[in-house]
Image (tube, rainbow, N blue to C red):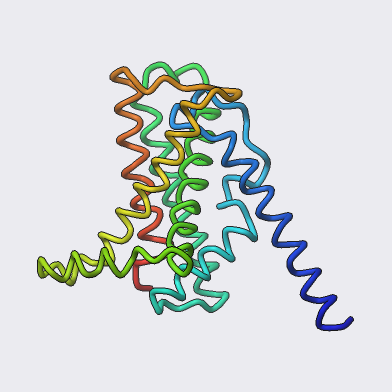
Length: 204
């Protein structure tokens, strides 16, 4: 196989993985309980596309990017998400009749949003924004907290996209007003921050 054919094959596979990811993203909502079941594999950080995004994002922070390290990060990240989401779902009495399904939907939403945060970090190579955040942190002597601030900004951008997708007139529109919706929105935002931090900016 020629180098051009290898490149074409690689790009086609990447496009297929990206298509699967964005298909799951377009079905995600801050009001996760209103969404239809997501595609199989969405809970495992959306597979190969997620692996590529995490790898690329970690390179920008000079973090280890070998296969073993990233595999461990994905494993432990998924484990933490599943445990934390499983506990959180218990506290919503409206999920009492179908907690397993609600738990799966919450995990999927958080995983997809976390990878979206990684995508925003990768996009820094095209539309630089990270240096501005670092400059802001350094100007206030927040040097140890600079990476946390990057995670927070990336998570917030991912959250904004999920909110925009939620309120759009799609298959499962979501009204974000109400104590329940606001509470879960805050919880998801915190989980996205945790996800981006664990996957990208946290040292191994």
